[in-house]
Image (cartoon, rainbow, N blue to C red; front, top):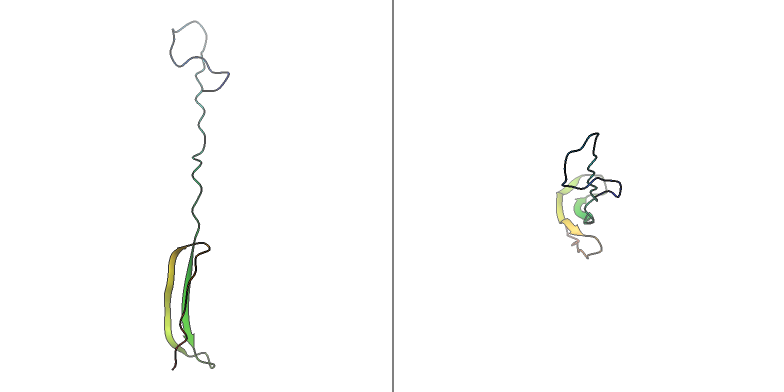
Amino acid sequence: MDKTSDPATGVVAEGTKHVIYVYEKDATPEVKKGNVDVTYVAEDGTVLEATSDVVKDGEIGSDYTTTEKKF
């Protein structure tokens, strides 16, 4: 409750009473995530293999590995 608030319960009296509730924002931090994908492309720009996900919604700072392929 706000410091200037009237009590949450009481007796109605002449005039206006102001009951003020104060809320804090949830302190839970936003969990940031990252994505990694891989696409295999020839020197002339031809896509050799479509883009595929390596990591989807991964934890920031975690490791990932891709594989070089022979075409």
